[in-house]
Length: 212
Ligand SMILES: NC(=O)c1ccc[n+]([C@@H]2O[C@H](COP(=O)([O-])OP(=O)(O)OC[C@H]3O[C@@H](n4cnc5c(N)ncnc54)[C@H](OP(=O)(O)O)[C@@H]3O)[C@@H](O)[C@H]2O)c1
Image (tube, rainbow, N blue to C red; front, top):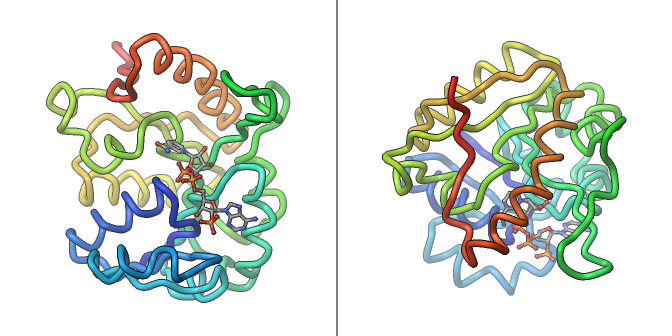
């Protein structure tokens, strides 16, 4: 499958490398392609502009900084997103006052909703924003993969497809469908807890597990 990943930071590179290992045709966006050229060549990942990357993907993943996501998606081009699944991994973290960051949108709105509102023809599925990049692509590294991720979105078929792909690509087994895109308020609000757990443990190799 052709996958377009907007952003080539920690999340973009981690997902891209694993997806290539899984046989997918992956392009990441980079504003300074020379910075990621050596890594991309080694990993077998294509590099393009935001619009080239969105056009490349049959499915598009938003792995840009939360505060820049809507702007980056606009540059990616509404037409290149229309009708496609857009997996949104970004978090609305404000680091301007240092650690721990605060959320610049919460409670009555979320970044996932803002993206869906700005791009009504994209099928936004909020997913994977509640855990570290390394675990996103290799859940089996921790507790045999017995832990939980969430999907939020307005399109049930898109959520089902993302859940299926996350199982096929990375081995995810416990994926809870929380409901429409407003439920992204819940998963984005897990970040203040996640960050304090990371500060307490001194590492990011932990995960939420919903016992039920
Ligand atoms: N790191 C994690 O484990 C983790 C886990 C869950 C969720 N997330 C979320 O996933 C997203 C990516 O995280 P990350 O750790 O990969 O961050 P990162 O390493 O800081 O990378 C951020 C990416 O956003 C891009 N970007 C920033 N401003 C941009 C703009 N105006 N236009 C286009 N692209 C822009 C950067 O592009 P340049 O390289 O060109 O600057 C870079 O590729 C964030 O929203 C984060 O909250 C991260």
